[in-house]
Length: 370
Length: 194
Image 1 (cartoon, rainbow over the protein chains, first blue to last red):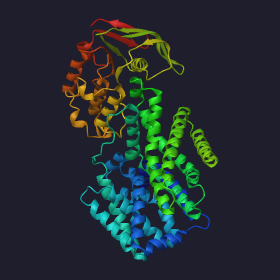
Image 2: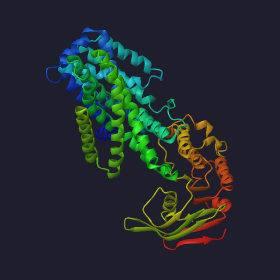
Image 3: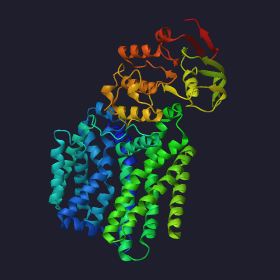
Image 4: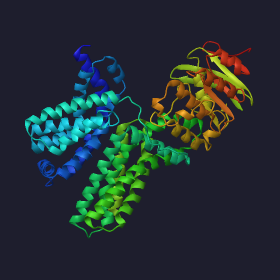
């Protein structure tokens, strides 16, 4: 097959599938970065220096990034159309191209290293991240854990010389080959959905979709809420006395609304997929509305509760703050769920986005007026 | 059990069903035969409420067991999760339905629907239609992609049910149906001798 055609095919199969997940992730990380690096806050070089200075910080931050980026690159290896690619029997070329595809999903991480420590550091970070992410998808294979271990060794060693590009690049290539070879193996899945009252069972089915097939969205929502929680912690520390509950609700209204909006799409897609069954079983509209609200509330409330709890502990704020945030996030989830179902019938993403901004603004205003 | 009168359905400017009348009484099994695109699946989707916009009247029982032609289940769920979800919606237990063991779905419960073959999906889809032993079964090409054993199990089950079945399989119609109706785009519906 002609090389140009092969590149095009990899791009429209794996490349497209990765882009769909990587773009929301990059947007969410970009928003979080705007909070962390905005104004007179931290600079990228400060963060990179912190990682270079402490093994613990390095491993923790790399761990968080690899967790976020792995689900973004996962569809590169099993997206629709990749079976045709496999049939062309050009695994080396495809693997090399998949390194580039997987590296594109690491853009925010690469940017951090380029801005913080220079272009060479960015290239090494790109290859190491690709190696760690791709090999983590093949941990059940024979070679996967070895490549995964070597990738973490590179992280631990923190090699900064130009020569580090070679082992990192080689490892990235090997990891994509292992992940490519292992992608079509059937994996065991933990059961999430059980027989329960209809709204609960439906909500669990929606959450299962988020966890299994829309992990990048789940992570983007988590990043959104945790960035809000970080801002809350800073705000509470700077001024511990003045109405902490009200401030928590004001600060978290926007991130929570956006997080719920991010999670609405997989839930709506699952509902659409079950249309025939839902109609044939005459499932009531109220059941569907409740299920959607529950599905959005489960993850967003979990993120909000943990983020607010950490912020409360860090700022030594009253313990009622996380409880208030939990209640607030449930109400926001219900509002976003109702709007998402209405807007999905209109099939207009602009209408949906405008509504979400209106909801976020309304909740922020309500919290301010409290 | 099921009464359809003056049913007309348009897809844009094309009329798929024109003034259709159909009755299915308790204990009856009506087979719909006809060419591709003559409106069999559309009729079934209207009866089950999957499609809404139509002219005419449809009187159908509240609970209908429906298996579409293409098993339309969320790919991310395990087969067991899907059956539990359907059981929750129908407030029944799928294990109490008469057919799961004959269709051997036990071995599929821990597998993702995305990983199932077409025949395996069809078996899961059929079991989900039979959950709660609904008074009326509406099945679209129920024996598509089934192996011989599963096909026989479905036929045996259908013989004990009230059902409206769309099929191209004349043998299935002959063995199961108490009435056979042929549909065609040009001539509408006509009852055919068994």
